[in-house]
Image 1 (cartoon, one colour):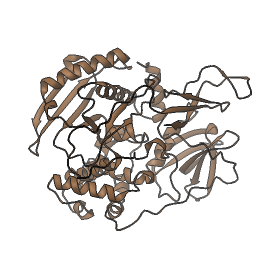
Image 2: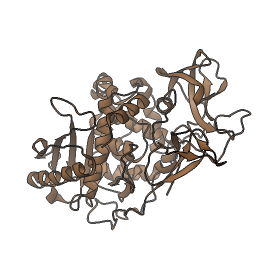
Image 3: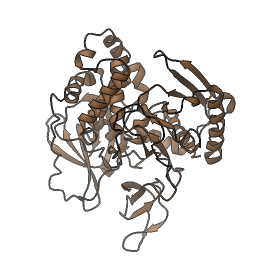
Image 4: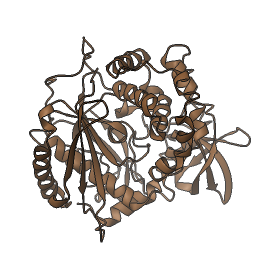
Length: 470
């Protein structure tokens, strides 16, 4: 188990409370325990907001629950679930020292409002923060009566902490198109703030939304299964839930985000999402922002997943702002300026630049991240004039999938196997001081004593994720 200082380091980087980071850390190991369990690992399919954050992109809202679609109806049994999680908690404790008391394992199997069976579970945990009093909890939502239109796949779970196992953490999960379709269906069915945030957020990731036809056809099958109409923008207008959706925006999302974008920002973008989904409009590709006269290392790209950069100002705050179209109040050269962040680039001299626009004048500006003196994410929104490159595709791109020919609900095994330790990504860690690169099977940016490329001792002990190789 990592120590409290590492939790605090990430808390500073993300600008979120330490208990939120601790839960994210524990969620990763609970996923590892579920995946490694011989009975539930092969047949539980990870989905929902936590799946998006842990398997696709890290600059996203933090989630608190674990949602799974089960492919074995016999698993929806209270005694079976408690027994499995007693075994899972033992595995997690042996691997990490995270305590999940067996007397705090609770599962309730019930008939849902669709007439099918579901289960809800809660587990308590004692992690690095070692809380006193009542332990924090993780909620699990398990369903069987959900249609799986597309084949699930096995993917690495992003676990940026130093105790990530050498062969990584894997989970069977919903493919991106299935998650997108499921979120649109959920928004039409219940109109919750997190669903609106998720749908618009997913649409903004250009590198992931290229196959609109697959998303729409998947949505059609899901709606048919639920006996509901395929939603259009008219589905969301003039409904009584609209007022509740706006009223609950702050309550349901504020604690999961560094800064909360306005409800209106997401609501006004929803018509464009729905028109794109139904093929009425196409997404307009924007140009990349210019880096001016700087000589850029074209082989370098910022990491897709979040990390602790160990810089004066947390870089992840700026990346979060870009993803959520929020301006940043930057303190640079002893002056404040309001900027629109667009891209991180590395010069041939080894300096990492933040390429941005001045919000007031629209002029291009480059800022060396090692010279940024302060950065505050504001609630001032901006409409991107260039493509947002601070969260590139890389390993978050939608995987190549074998589609089910019938489009019917999933049944049986896909033939996927758990990956062995020799498989998985290789993380390329680059020293922030000398630029030397190190290949690792474990995502850890702390560096051991080493020599630079000229053979001289380097004082650098911190690196950043320069690349991920598969």
